[in-house]
Amino acid sequence: MWVKGGQIARIADHFDPNATIVLYEGDCLTLLGTIPEETVQLVVTSPPYNIGKEYEEKSSLSAYYQSQKRVIEECYRVLKPEGSICWQVGNYVDNGEILPLDIFLYPIFQELNLQLRNRIIWHYGHGLHATKRFSGRYETILWFTKTDDYYFNVDPIRVPQKYPEKKYFKGEKRGELSCNPLGKNPTDVWDIPNVKANHIEKTIHPAQFPVELIERLVLSMTKEGDWVLDPFCGSGTTQIASMIHQRKAIGAEIEKKYVEIARSRIMAAEKGELRIRPMERPIYDPSAKTPSIHPKIVHTGKSNKTVPLSPIDLNRQFKNNSVIETSLRFAKSIR
Image (cartoon, rainbow, N blue to C red):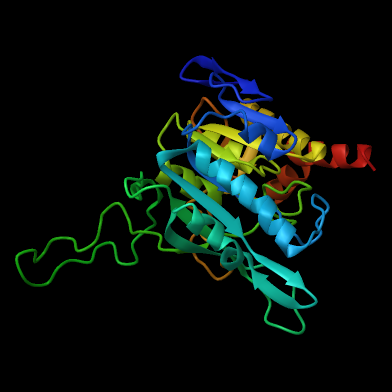
């Protein structure tokens, strides 16, 4: 359990409207069938790509399409009229030929009359190196809304202005700031590191969301107390991002070992032992003269804080991170 506003919040293994976190082990369609219509404010997920990862069985494209269609239709059913769906996907690869899954799956959303607001490009600097094509360094997030009357607030995720002191030099506004003092819109291209071996958040999950990616969506598309749903929740990143900002989260995961990892991360956040990469931390630049922003300690129910760690301490903390240790112990136990 974790504490919010002095009250104990509940973690359930099935949908419970009085819970704060739902972590269901099993097929997401089973869980979705228990959620009432128009309950969820935000659906955010990264489904299997049908490329034969350990947590999926590769099938024909037509079978994959139909399986995604069933899940998306249920997500639509449980979505509030003012809610959003963010479907994060990459490419299906077969014999060196790629099929962009956002293009492949788009007709499903179109048939439901969902409205595409942005095709967000998630750019990252590390990945597999290709030899017969350019190396892929981005994936996409399709952001759909159910109606035109949707909730969106960019202020919590604004980024620093390039010229924060820039002013109008003529006209009625001469001398006034020409930019928003809160920062600028982050645009639809997001440069956020993916979770690889040396990432502070790394577990054994092979396709883990970075917390800051989900934080941007949660903060801009939901309010405190809203439900956030991830039907393929993996290592529980959506739950973590929701907890940090006082949202409630529902997640389903079919693989037992990832459910255990998600649970261990939630418990670490409860105890104030979970470390994440802060949203405001810039991409690493070895030539930068300004000091880097330190990792953030998540302690749900209390103020989250950054901790000053030297490179040596950071490496030691990473190696001793309780979430990593739990992941590795669990992985060894099922071999």
